[in-house]
Image (cartoon, rainbow, N blue to C red):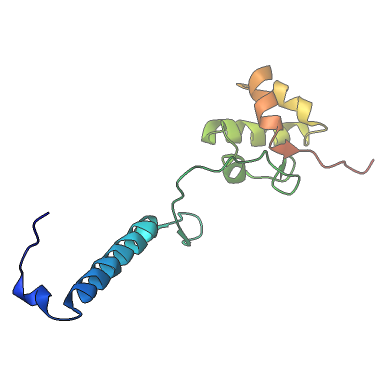
Length: 134
């Protein structure tokens, strides 16, 4: 194997310094790559807080009892947060509630114009009806 004769590297300690600089550059590059997703944070439209992108989407559990909406108290704007419920459907739910004096059960969603059994079952995962006093 032929050895290169570079005058700058022939000084004592120069080769070790070159190797240390190479390791330092490599370490900096690895740190930069690890932080790359955090360099472009996107603000959340609802809170304005910065959300850092993740590499894999985390599975979202179904709505908890606290996250569900009461059909007798939620306004149309709140109902549009339910997947599959747009402005028109939300307004129909509110109109049905006002016309019939409120919902007695979640199953009454079947009676709202434009909502069939399958869609009512999907919406039912995100809503509840608070028991009323007799």
